[in-house]
Length: 235
Image 1 (cartoon, rainbow, N blue to C red):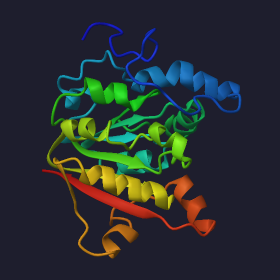
Image 2 (cartoon, rainbow, N blue to C red; image 1 turned 135 degrees about the vertical axis):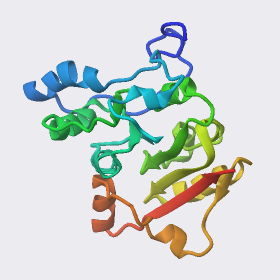
Image 3 (cartoon, one colour; image 1 turned 90 degrees about the vertical axis):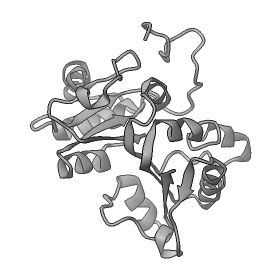
Image 4 (cartoon, rainbow, N blue to C red; image 1 turned 30 degrees about the horizontal axis):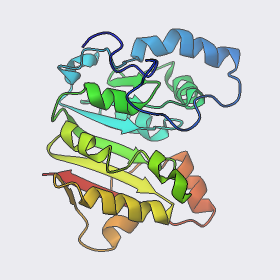
């Protein structure tokens, strides 16, 4: 892949990004991790993704990816619980990445790679059928109608998600915003390659058995919000 072809720093980037990249100023220790520790785990759009399983320090039988991992609770727990699976986590918010790095610095999972940027550039770089699971958990709902076009889970992105999923692979999505839940379901069911796995209300009102709660999800539940959990399979 030519250098910079999909880079978000291009003068005319392929994907327009919405949302925060930086919050409160990083503490010196956090900045050190971003500068010194993150490069050891980092992948970017110019990484050779021809064999994603080869990105990791240990042999892996499959590759999973999380888009927008926030502070990384779910990503870290899944990586540690599944040492034979490679994980790629994408998060543009530098404070979230710093939070994850602070927890794993002493014992970083060898099956973990991170991209501090827009996940769509990594999706573009991945080969067809290269992921066995894709997580899009509690993304920014952009609830106002004029903001809906900013949603990462959309008719524009879903065909690309489907492309990188292997046959039988799973796309997991979750939200506590009911208008976004309806949007997710409507747009995912419009993609012929994806099949909704639900057979009864409990299939989407309750999380899967291997679910790892996220900080955002816990706050939503404590505030009395309902959460929904969607699972789609690549045909």
